[in-house]
Image (cartoon, rainbow, N blue to C red; front, side):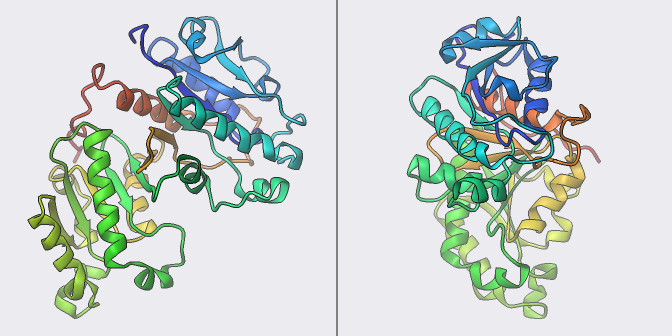
Length: 337
């Protein structure tokens, strides 16, 4: 059981026409005896069969958990139709995220867990000026840079470049960017995961990590030198490693996180190993932020079949990270062969 003094995790509602309301309700049902939480949004957007307890402040969330989903009410401009984004509700989605950040930064919530948003709906309905959730959170927090980690009990991965075309990766991947990504990853593992001396594996960019320059020069020209320099500075690094041999069970046991060069290099292995339980963790922010590793799923919204596993794991992870006295999050569980 969770100590009564634990601060609750705030859930921002995300896109109300997606599966966010459904998976938040299912997560409450699964976690009500373990993780104090509350949902910020319009209760009219929740599934009709979900018991709701309206709260005035986050301090009331823990006591309300046994009776229903604690809801910090934020009235939206319009009703929600599953599977169809309503432009009038876009500003409400944006405002709920900002409200969640304010509650965490003011010490009223332990962490922020964000339900999925639909970026185009926000852009069309409210002129949303950010590429995604992470960039908006970074701006709200005044952080210099945020880094995306995908984490599960079997693997943690960090892509250095994210949502760009594969052909653009070599020119966007710079020594400064990789150094900064490794630094933020190491700090996040120490501060948010409680790993005193984090071990980080660094992937190569090219097949076979360049194979001595035969398949690309980036590893030989600068990646290997950067890894060597940072190791001399006290980081526990290994690499650049061939990405095709980094993610089997024995290899995963040798590091706490893998820093990869591009999006699919990082996300394919974790989604293969733990598709339903991967969690998006944002490193580099002055507060804890997690989210489920999936989108709004308009195609199944309102049908009641959405899998809440990733949301459940995102809430559990946020609670663990915020309460090191309650959970020992030192290492990932031993990998399965």
